[in-house]
Image (cartoon, rainbow, N blue to C red; front, side, top):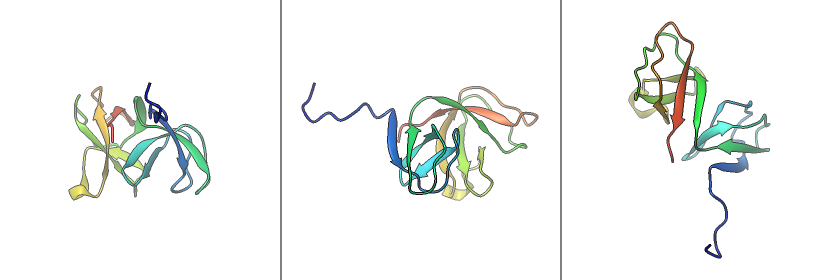
Length: 111
């Protein structure tokens, strides 16, 4: 193993960019992940940067398997709408999620 190896990077401990709750997306610059615990703004939070997570979505979105999923920070919901680049990409839907469902299963994109 390389002498300068630090960690795999599947989980990172970073200062929370805002108050976060466990299971919520965390976006800190180009780091995109899911909070593994609650944290106040500035406090350390463990963030998963890989894996599949079930996330609340915009109710009217009819998500197809393989669709790109973005985070609408204003609504605090996953969506298929990138809002002209304003919404951060979370990952890819690994299952269809019709407009009658309130969640979508997302495989996080590696940042």
